[in-house]
Image (cartoon, rainbow, N blue to C red; front, top):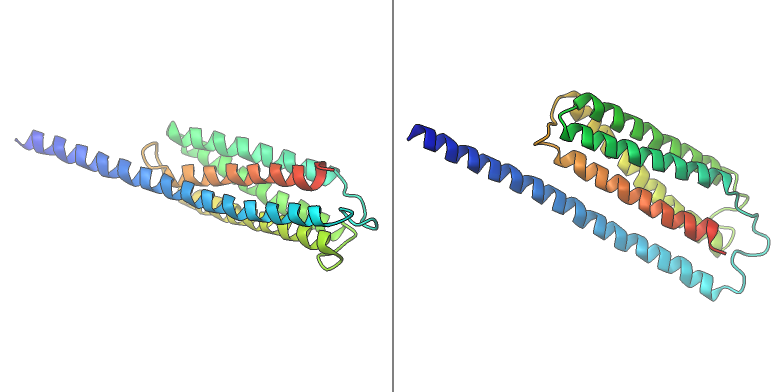
Length: 199
C-alpha cells in the first residue's frame, strides 16, 4: 500500500510540475504574441508615413550606413546560437554550459545596445528633424528597450543558474527567456530589412 501511495504521489507531483511548465511556456508565448502585435503597429505606422510622404526619407537626410547594423545583426545571430546552446545544455543537465551560454549572450546584448547608441549619436538627424527621424528613432528605440529587457531577463536566469535552481526537469524560465530572445532577434531582422534594406 505504501509503495502504491508513493507511486501515486510521484505521478501527481510529476503532473503538477508538467502543468506548471506548460503554463509558464504558454504565458511566455502569449506575451510574445502581444509584443508582436505592438511591433506590427509600429511597422504599420512606418509604412503609412512612408506612403503619405512624397520622398522617403527626406532629400536632406544623410544616407544610413550598413556597417553598424550588419555588425549588430551578427551580434544577435551569435547570441541566439549561444542561448540555444545554453538551453540544450541545461536540458542535458549541464549547468556550467547554461551559465556560460546565457552569460555570453547577455554580454552580446549589452554590446548590441552600445553599438546602437553609437549609431544614434552619429546618424546626422534627430527624432525632431522630420517625420522620418521620429519614426526611425521610435521604432529603433522600442527595439533597443526590448533588448534591454531581454538582457535583464538573462541576468536573472544567470543568477538563478549560479544558485543551482535549474535542472532538466526545471528549466521553464530558461526556455521562456530563450523564446523571448529569439523573438527579439526576429524583430531585429524585420527592423533591419525595413529601415536599411528596403528602398
